[in-house]
Image (cartoon, rainbow, N blue to C red; front, side, top):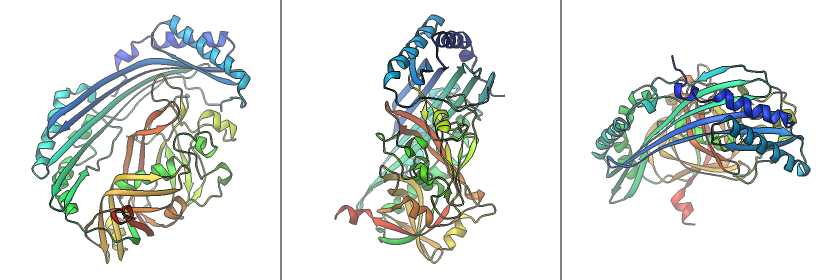
Length: 497
């Protein structure tokens, strides 16, 4: 049975929380919460089988957030004593008092059931921090050595995080959590007489343990065996023919389009205009709820903080709200947003759906993305069946570069590789491709989604938002999907104009 590390539980969690919350209440706070975090991260990077960099970081501290005079106050500290916790609470209250005269919007939080002494641990088998770094480096070096037999250069990287959180608030909620995530990636590079290019693995980052590298959840041997050959084929491939194409998009590419055009667009703080300085607001404004035709009737999107192995999966968010699954788009219509407690109450939702998150003990929670996923069709087609429906088009695999405007509406995406589809069959790779469109036109062109057998949970460690900037991990699941008449650019021709 997975358990929270004893050394974290040995910290004076309750004593610090009690001291901070009591002091905040004594000073008149209407609400107070205490959050103590330990975040350990390890990064290993290799170039051509040789270790190039290794970082092992450990961030430990606590934060106190209060509401006083209908105004937020926040402060953080690192000295783990009851006296320090009380002082930090005093600082948070003082921030609220100083800010209250200029606060134009009273702060109130949506109610949440009290969760007493709740414990949650993410789903993993082997804690990566229990595995010696030398063993991890040896595995990456072995993989790199095999890839070098068919490539000029190889980079390998392994990112690992263990996040431990203790939360308590004046309502009586007390939660303790531990989650593990990791992201292995390898990239091969090769030059020929016709040019230079590279290609990366499409294995997604996951909320799993070290077992992910040894065969649980991904066939590393199969992907690595074919990667140099796929790159060689890409180097010899012709340039794409620009124009309208039918597209079959693999989950390894489509997850990023979901992230940028649906995930960010349906964060309620963006839709209301609060999040504007960092990558803009959203075209999916609040007045369009239950009316906006986001896409075709086969577009069904959920936000989920509970899916197994999701990077944004938690037992409870950083406001003490239990993880939930909820609709965002149903049958092509915008039906929901991602919420924190304040905005849930402000806009009449009654309860938050658990999207408050802070990336460190030194930051206050802000509204962050759940695992936003496109649902597959029950008994739906395979990827091969979707391809068979296309006379002239492209099959796109893997994410590469992307661009989207400040309102999450006009976009352009590339991929690791694309294959021509001719009369329902793959006909070799093409290069220099990008697909472009508006969010509603693109999702409106989606004719079919694949079945559960095509579904993959992709994602990223590094979703950025907020000022000061915060980084959050998030997953996006989706099946393969078929789109009709999408505009495809030839990036060499477009770049030369």
